[in-house]
Amino acid sequence: MKNESGMALLITLSIIAILFAVSMELNRRVRISILASETGKTEYRLLEMAQSGLNVAKAILVRDANNNEIDSIQEEWSDPKALGEIMKSLTFDGGSIELKISDEMGKIQVNALINEYPGYGVNVEQQQVWENLLSFFISSDKSEDERNPKEIINCLIDWLDDKDGETITGISGAESSYYESLEIPYKTANREMVDLNELFLVKGISKGLLSKTQSLDPLFLDPNDPGKAFRLNDLFTVFGVTKKKMGATVKKYFFPGKININTAPMAVVAAILPFGRQDLAETICEYRLHRSDGESGYTNDLSVKGWYADIVGLAGKEKEQMETIITYASRVFSVESHVRTENRSLVLKSVVLRKKDENGKWYCKTLRQQID
Image (cartoon, rainbow, N blue to C red; front, side, top):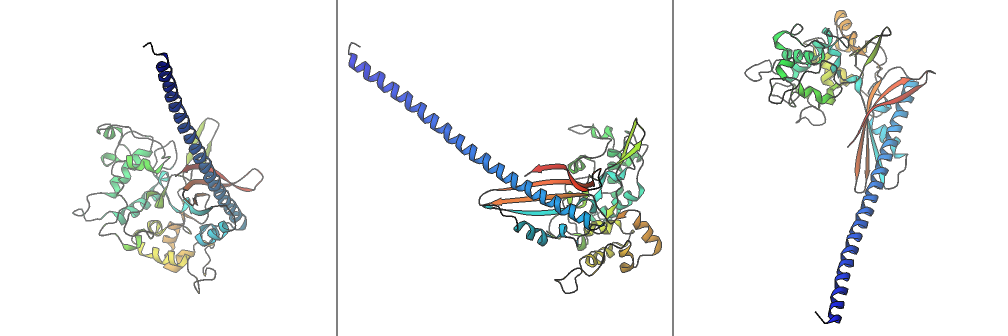
């Protein structure tokens, strides 16, 4: 203890050890900060590229509205090849953008099952569309499938209407008393759905609702992957609301539910056809995409109202029935902007509403957006 030179050496070594530890921690934090900064910079760049893709999609949809009054799968916005050529003309260093635009109005509007909101009146025409569609995926043979399309629809009606009782759908529906008895209890919404995932909260609706069954007609299989079930957003949408003026105090809104026959997928086309005529859906879908030589423009004009009736031989009343639930133009579209670089990717999913401003000019308003 009396050796002062030894003590000085010990103190010096201790200080060096502390400084070394501090410098190593500082170095670690600086490296993490640099990596975080680079990651943030990359993420920002990817997002900006994806946003550029969305802006291009909006411009394409606006140009389309200025050129014609209908929307169909024959048009530029629906053609992956045409969209690919457009995006190739935009140069981004070290990355690429792929666009996909889909028509939300070519799908079944879930909320259209109720005539207006707030309210509890059932839209009978939309109810029939649901019954038709579910009959494709649910076997009528109860030994094979115990599910009942009408019961599922009644449960959905109870979820949407503003009456929390059995006066509308009877005992085959499901109100809060049923959901509150579950292991994890909850109440019915008694309002319109704002997200398709809400469907899984409704009694009788599971993720296997649109799965492949033994009795499922091959025509209704997902063309992108016939071995798998449809995704909900392939056939359904929660968008399409229209405001209804009822004075200064009463606010009403509704979902028209009209489906664009020019863009609807085959399963939806089959569902809007008169009951028992679903086999005509294939002919209608082939007619929409027919080309004379496989390369030039489309052969058939989809701008003429009722074009589908003659090619499949629908009778006058059947055509009248169809016209009440279909449309030929759309206003809500979903856009996917896929961005890829050498080692990163990002998908910006948006839903846009195409409408006119106060000066009568078309523009697209973003309704919803998420990043994957």
